[in-house]
Length: 264
Length: 267
Image 1 (tube, chains in turn yellow, orange):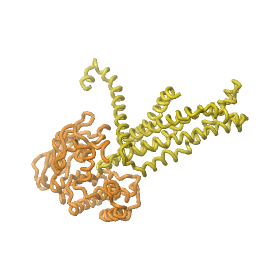
Image 2 (cartoon, chains in turn orange, blue):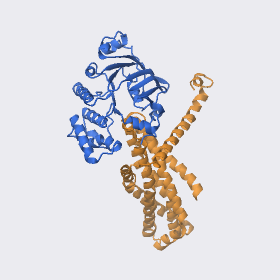
Image 3 (tube, chains in turn brown, blue):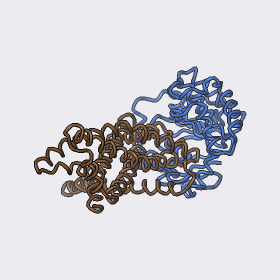
Image 4 (cartoon, one colour):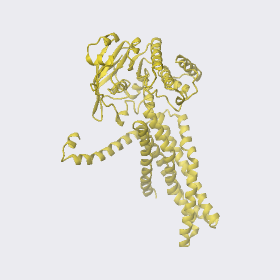
């Protein structure tokens, strides 16, 4: 590459190729990171105390923000859905519309995005600080595997917490839609819930669960990776945290498209 | 015995180590001196297996660290202690938990026994009254002493000290060095002490090595160092180097170098 960039004819091609090569290298590193993480997941012992702490941090501590997001998403859906359906003369379908939109799509995606912003960023920052203050090196010197201590508990905690938070998001969102559609705009409660029951089937619920499982793994993978490979000083941690949130959020949306096209 | 043979290491094409070789005998302390930025910390991390050399090898009791299986490397590292420049205390744990951590993870000791060992260890560094504090609540000198207590709790055969007095005032710095000296006499460990504290460390080191431009420029006893004829060694020891003679090498590490030998290995 050095010779290439020294040559004024080939230098532009060298510069052009450097970016994709860098992206490919980063993808390879991320793949290796995931493989090592999965290797530790399936090879005991697990650090249960750390896992419990991370389930609380990623799951329980995100409950309020996820519930609020779910409630207002459901309420907005109630409003928009009611007025849209009113134009078609079919407001009775508000229940299925809110239910399907939340369970299939908005619940998994928005809950995952909220967890990324609240917990994923904190995980990336925590691991990044441990990296720059040589705490990860200390684990290695002690002959302990940093993946087992830092990455695996976050990975498993996100796998457990994100589907549960998605379920909370869905339920609160449906109640938010009920509040607006039934209590505020006068739709009958029977129509709202009855039609929802008729049109939302197990396949829709399972689709949402699969998505949220994938998103949980994705959040932990990206955020732990970015923190683990943080650069130097406060700037390095700050950059790692930002990249973790941006990359995880974009990947959630991209992966959601592919999963939707496969599952539904 | 730990031996570094012809270590070469570069980051982003910038050479840091350029054929550095050094042997440390069991029970012997070697002071590693040299200009800042010439790769002393990088050299030390190679000896602990935290970095993999581009060329050359590190042998511990005849085992090449780079060729060991992760589990074997983890086992071997139980004989190492490392005092990092910043202490590297786990900031989410109290002082007590920090010192107890290696015992909980690497031994089958019961909690009452661990408590006794930790209390005794902290008493040795005169910090048995801060056990419930967190690292952020400690001064720099206290954090270094806690880190020293943690590094020594498993009675390592080899100790690696990365500038233990960096960032401390001279009084606290000398107190830390005295403490290291007294612990070494008591526990008998060998190892390497990266330092700029000349001649304060001469009281307890058997050898002094000077790393200059990625190579070990000099190895000898403290007396031999003081009598050395080499211009660079004399200039560095007496602190009278003309400006511009040293050209420190940039030892910034790329991110991939952090995938140390044990990444993915260990327990």
